[in-house]
Length: 211
Image (cartoon, rainbow, N blue to C red; front, side, top):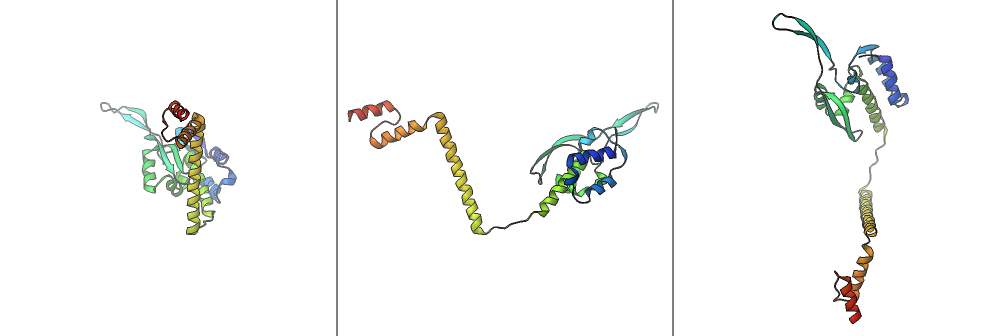
């Protein structure tokens, strides 16, 4: 159950990458991660918000006999949406961690607001370092505003692209099922013979021969 902070630091740097860490994050991690700490193995793979296994005694009502027992946290597997990643994250969390996430306003805000010394699991530290790095890169990006004419051109281009894709799918379906040639023959017969039957091609041939 016990693991050392140095091994935990090596794993984090291997997963995230030392170059991908934001400025000053490595020093904060080294200060926050203790040399040794007792944590459940499954807590390394989730967000537990300080809730871990506890040990105590079970006392009988008759003689007051004590027997050892343990209390495990209420762990649930949830899908939490991350705005910076634009996808859902499947993670194991405790009910206390869920309340903390709801109070913070989301998984991204919870990871950003929670200090490193309270992130006592490998997964929490890994996601916190990753989210901080992505938000730092997002803050360095330049924002460009377009004029209304350019926006109208972009919208028209998207509409034309959708129409072209729809026409391409229609042509592909016609070639796949062999309908294009048959439809062209029916249209040609309708244009040459106004009284031809469009449903039955043989009647149209007979009418053309009689004429």
